[in-house]
Image 1 (cartoon, rainbow, N blue to C red):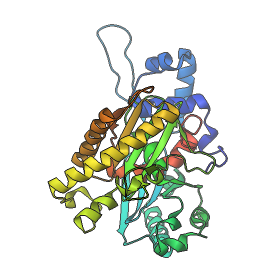
Image 2 (cartoon, rainbow, N blue to C red; image 1 turned 90 degrees about the horizontal axis):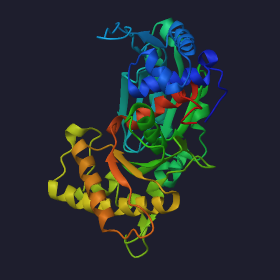
Image 3 (spheres, rainbow, N blue to C red; image 1 turned 180 degrees about the horizontal axis):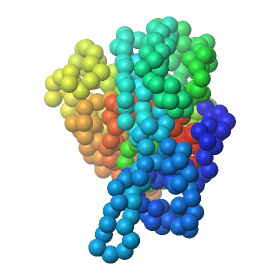
Image 4 (tube, rainbow, N blue to C red; image 1 turned 30 degrees about the vertical axis):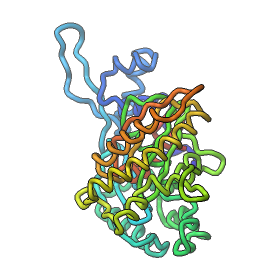
Length: 374
């Protein structure tokens, strides 16, 4: 949730835009920034000098071409700012320290049968204390916030989750911390991570679907992540779909890791190395999930005219590719009179999307133009 934008140096929008362009496109000289931002060379020089003095940009080695003046590419300074991220999942809690270049410097995790509030809070507080103790005073001063990625309405997912009903997680974790705390839906943060750290060729409008224990998602319109009045937009796992039992069902009943686990009769581990699903079972699950995902995607296209679906998840890359292809095949078989079928591509972050998205909440708030994830 947004707070006052008076954090690190109260950067101007143009300064944030410079940082965002370099984050997405990689190191670039000032001349490239002049062209992209339609500002004068002197303005770009002044802005980038200020960012370098603040420690957010580093100058690379001078590049000398055959013609023209030599150029100096500017890159993000990894130590420019640090961000903490906490991800609360149905089976796994994660805590990470992420630097300004998007690299995870420290990572801790804890597997659980279900996320009990007392256990998650103890994991988070102990982990934060340990991480902060390893940092120098200068590094601690560079931490701009803690972002939390958690499913909304956790208490809806079984009686064992009822203790979450009256817990203000953001408030409880913010107590005693010297930096702000942000909270967002875990599916939304996965989408936000793709926006900040992922592909640089995304259109300004798309839907992001993330397949984990359940399914979630995010919606991007006009280049900005949309939250809705209760900050629960993109709750695709809850979308009703046809042909699931006599009374229908929801997307998560078919397109989720929990649905695959039900087929094999056991839980899957929270890492790719332990993914040992029989190929025939996975293929049948992916085919059924692909049809459910195609229904959800076409419904979204009919409502908001979205040209692209990005599909990612806490699954191995080969499984993600299989889901994406199953979804493409299902889309081609669906009627599309009056609308255009969306393109389907794979995301780039996989299992790291939600924890990077959590850390991306303070990053976005203080360093992205207009706070892209707010």
